[in-house]
Each structure stands twice: as structure tokens, then as C-alpha cells.
Length: 209
Ligand SMILES: N[C@@H](CCC(=O)N[C@@H](CS)C(=O)NCC(=O)O)C(=O)O
Image (cartoon, rainbow, N blue to C red):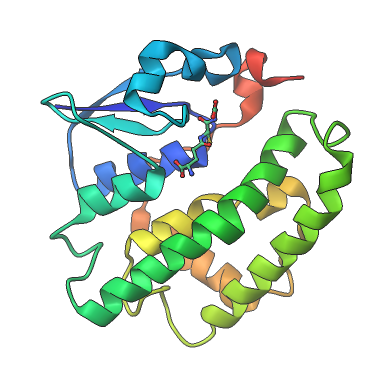
């Protein structure tokens, strides 16, 4: 069985939980106490040299880190990662977009906001907010003429971008003027179905400053 090294308030971890659920992939969870430094231990760095979760450990002990690499591995050969060369490339386009424009921007702002770190990061907040607005505008444009990011059906691109994208309100963004984006949020929510709760950092007393 696969082992998922996870931290519940992480939306990067959430991506893997969702895909494993949709594909009925059995896995066991090993929670990593990232705020207590468990990700920086030798044992964990052997699993992922970058020290972050999620990490998947295969039955034979090999590991895969980076949430979107985990999605690609698990989705290979399924409807969530189309084989068609163009649609495959479109999925990759949005996975790379997510890792540059969404996760380190909306994800980081959300982390600072929900764990009381905004003041500590004061100089970086405005540039991040400007970058987040650019990301939201790009998504609004990209979703105007397509139900899902890579065509007519849900793919891992939607799961990845939705993970932090739909939490933009957690860091104070008002999405009233993003009708295509919010309609896509509804479509993704419906397509993945219930059973994938969002956890807040407040569930972890170690996450506060
Ligand atoms: N780009 C990576 C980011 C991984 C990452 O930064 N994970 C965070 C949780 S969301 C983490 O484990 N941080 C603790 C640390 O790096 O020590 C991914 O998409 O998986």
C-alpha cells in the first residue's frame, strides 16, 4: 500500500488525498509535524531532500515528492491525465502555472494570514497580493471559454489549481468580480464530490507564531 506523508492543513497534501479518493487508491497516512521541525530531520530529508510534504512512498520504498508530481504519477493512464498530446500539455501548462502563480502566492498568503505571520512578512505582503490578483485574473480569462482547465472534463490540473485557488477568500480576496472562476469552483466542487475536508492551521497549536 502507498504511504502518504501529509500535514492536514496543507492544500498540497489535499490534492493527493482528493486524487487517491477519486481513483480509489488505497493508502495509509503518516502525519508529519512540520511546525515542530519533523520535515527537517535526517529521516524525512531522506524521503524528500526539500523537506516538504506531501511525499508518497511506494510499496518498495521509493518516494515521490512535489504534489503535482504525485498527481501525475497517480493519474497516469486515467481520465485525469489525458494521453492526447495537446490536452496532456494543457494539463502540464496549468500544473506549472499553479506552482509559480498560485501555490507560492495564494498558498503563502493564506499561510501567513491563518497563522498570524502577516506582520512578520510585512514587506512581502503587497507584492504577493499583487501577484495573487494577476493569478486570479489569468484564471478568470483562462476559464471564460472552457468548463475545466484542460477541456470538457476534470483533470489533475483542476485539482491542483483549485486546491489553493479556491481558498483565496482565506486571505481576504473578494471574488465577486470573477464569475468564470467562481463558476469553475462550483464545477470542480461538484466533480470531486464530498469527503475531502479543508483543515485550518488553527487545528494545529504548533502552527501559531
Ligand atoms: N512545491 C511543493 C511544496 C511543498 C511544501 O512546501 N509543503 C509545505 C506544506 S504546504 C511543507 O511541508 N512545509 C514545511 C517545510 O518545508 O518544512 C509541493 O507542491 O508539494
